[in-house]
Image (tube, rainbow, N blue to C red; front, side, top):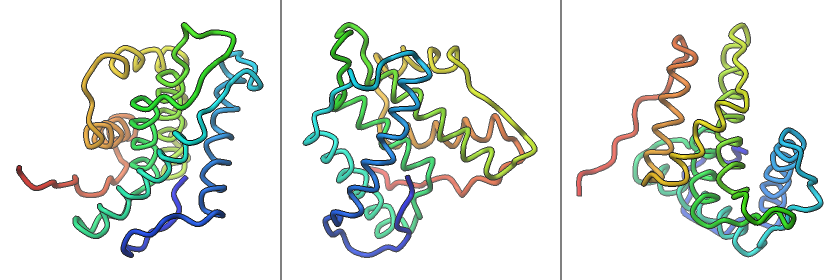
Length: 177
């Protein structure tokens, strides 16, 4: 999911960049659907909401770069996507309106990216997340107040806990109000 790393002022994403992000999200959504036994064809999307999420993540990337000199890593980007998917609910399973696919997909995506980052950094430490790990995030993602920054910190902490030898970037510092 991670794309640009420069700290240029904000500009709307190009059509190619948006298409790339949509393809990445679709790839993870297809994998999620296959893993949990949902027919991908039955998942609908409010495209305008998904495009808004992509734009919000890009704006945060630029903000972190300009004001905090922080390069947004793949885990931070995934955390932001998860945050906005939970808040704005772009997806629907037309066969199961009771099942909040957005929260479940966000939990799945969060752990998928944390696992991917950990395996990439330390291929000898193979940690796989299972259904019980995703289920463990459902309640907090559903009912707890989790900010964008808290979601990003959770990604850092989880990576440090699972891969204790992973060198994680310096903690993000945000100015006091």
